[in-house]
Image (cartoon, rainbow, N blue to C red; front, side, top):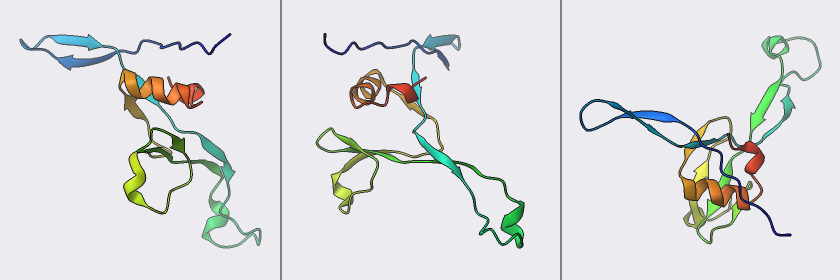
Length: 109
């Protein structure tokens, strides 16, 4: 069996022509994260020893050929769009379908 595309409805509101709220369906994408990142060098001293670890977001790059990758390419003209890690991105239906097809469906809400 082939892959099945499931698009979950999302709601955001915007102001309509007469000032009334219009509900639209929109999905959001939160790029993947790396496990906890620690800034302490293990010596037990210094200001960084007071920071606890937290997840670090990874950037997801949509290339001009329609593919996705997490490594920044050497040529920026090959990048069509950047989804910055650690941020929440609102998606169009086409972007949502592309990300799901690329294997990022688990990160779409």
